[in-house]
Length: 267
Image 1 (cartoon, rainbow, N blue to C red):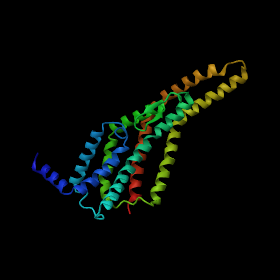
Image 2: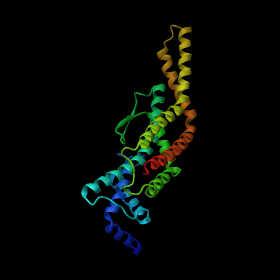
Image 3: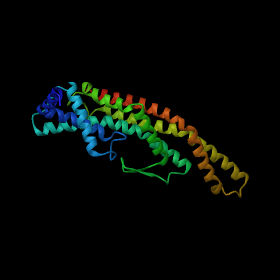
Image 4: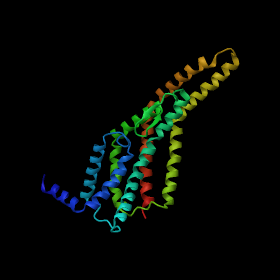
């Protein structure tokens, strides 16, 4: 260990209260992050990652001092505030990523896969098969295109815009309207990318309705269900290249929403 690293460790031990506040924001940031958040990954690895990132931020000089009420309750309230700042930033990423599950749910309902869901260990819920395909594709593109670097850089520079203890959270109307805006974008993007398959199946349903009128003895269930599955999978195969466009839409939305959330929390 060289002298610089030893000096950093000494500074951390001398300012352990400051380091813990940085660490708490990092833990809140990692807890909802896609790929590594939730029940995914090893807990000790996530804690180690949070400690390493906190050490880097501490050594960068972005955080030099913190002012709080000199009591256990004052420090505890500051810990809660810092945790929520990190959690809000990471939850935006988590929520926007979950738009693909909404897209997959609408797609599976049209194709007929809605009864064959998969258990997601991160949210402890059942997720659609197509949504799971979209999710892993988006996660792979996110890592390949270094989207995680953007998110980590955002939390890194958030200490300049939102110094420790200065975030405005309780009673923040701008933050509430920001959450509503995230929900609106969630449904808009999810429906937009599910629209091609919904349109394909709608055309198929109209065609089957005309055939039933023309041939009343035709068993529409025996003929219609396999055709809907074939048509849905064919449409899914055609729009697979559009996943990259979905990724860039999600990436830009994440960048915009994170910056807006940080701005509205600035007092």
